[in-house]
Image 1 (cartoon, rainbow, N blue to C red):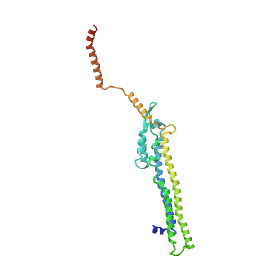
Image 2 (cartoon, one colour; image 1 turned 30 degrees about the vertical axis):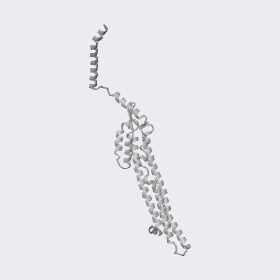
Image 3 (spheres, rainbow, N blue to C red; image 1 turned 90 degrees about the horizontal axis):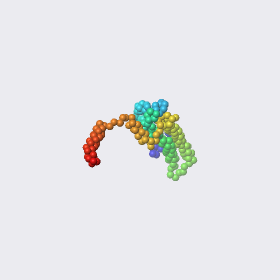
Image 4 (tube, rainbow, N blue to C red; image 1 turned 120 degrees about the horizontal axis):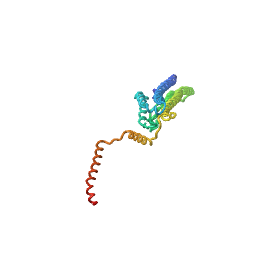
Length: 277
């Protein structure tokens, strides 16, 4: 550790460390912005599939086309996660007949599926990057200070002179540049982090709003309590539309039962007349 700290005694080392921190900042910003851009693009792709339909009836009638288009997004990356969230939400849709048309009602709010946490679009490791910049800057600064203090330790029996103290202060001031650069990188990346996260959250809310309450169009929300009722009404409607026919065996049994009852009545008729006389 002290051998590595001896490298920080050089006057040009703090400048190189600061430059390295700035390069890492640019690299992290580029990677993070690219990832957030892909996530926003995937969410906007879903929103485009929803908003291209005018009303709930058209959206319900073309739900198969929407499923096929979303499935074509792929199964990996941000688009794959969004497609998987749509498939899970699709399972909550319940058919309901209104004015002679089948309308799909969602029994679960879209925000339960299209949110940053469930989509896996949270910052994750990126939220620790600002702290890492500060930590690295402070660590190298104090490491340089330790190296500077070690270099001015006088021999046994001697005291530290003014020249050595002035040298220590000049070296220490140079070492603090690294911690200041780390702090600056932390502030800048925190701004980028907040902006990227806000864009993803806004895109996910936009998808949920377009599905649920897009100016009175789109899918209509049905509470989870009404889902069994809607299913029963739909099944009763189907049973009412289909002609009710008894199986041939059951029909024959009914005819045989009526025939037996008639024969028994005929057999009992003489006995009853005799008893009456």
